[in-house]
Image (cartoon, rainbow, N blue to C red; front, top):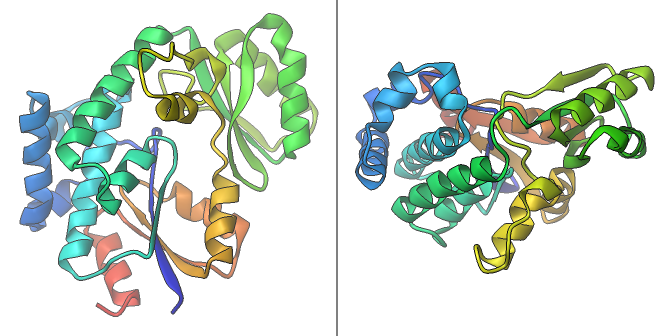
Length: 280
């Protein structure tokens, strides 16, 4: 087996109850949720396990919720002796990747992403902007749709996820128009995403004195996920484990390289399947 990469999901992967059975079965996972609760000053378990989708969808709740769930799953893999050669995260997932790499402590990261979500939502109030996934068009076609839709507001490519899937972000009216234009060009789908702010576009640019330049670049510029995966493949990664809620990143990897081995860890069944395939 070649190198192993751990991939961490971003916003949109959240769901009520995520990580619950992992927490019930592994104390190392439970400890992460307790640390998050202590760091943030509210019951993170209650919000994720017993809350509602609308509350969880609010950016300042979503970001620490996904980070916490991802790191809880990571701690179980570490306890089982599985370590990655490479880590990467999509958007918000970059913070989980930093925790996995040891460059940021979990308690610091969960506080940061809570504030990150709050500042993002303050920059663009609820209902003003959104994001949408365009399925089945080329990069050039999606860029053209955005250009044509700019007469009604801001709309820009935000995530270049994999061949045939690009996410756009911007003001609601402009997103709607870009989606209509994409369908006219032959897109298979143009789907508005369950997020409450337009990540990775110019609407989230901040003054240099407010946050560090690197994080400004990360949050207000496109995510070149496909390029990141191709780089890992070139460097000898053959197995990708998605750590945290959902299987979206695994799907992206398969569209980039059908030969790549993909697994995910979000609950007990997926954990057991991954451990079996990795020989643990």
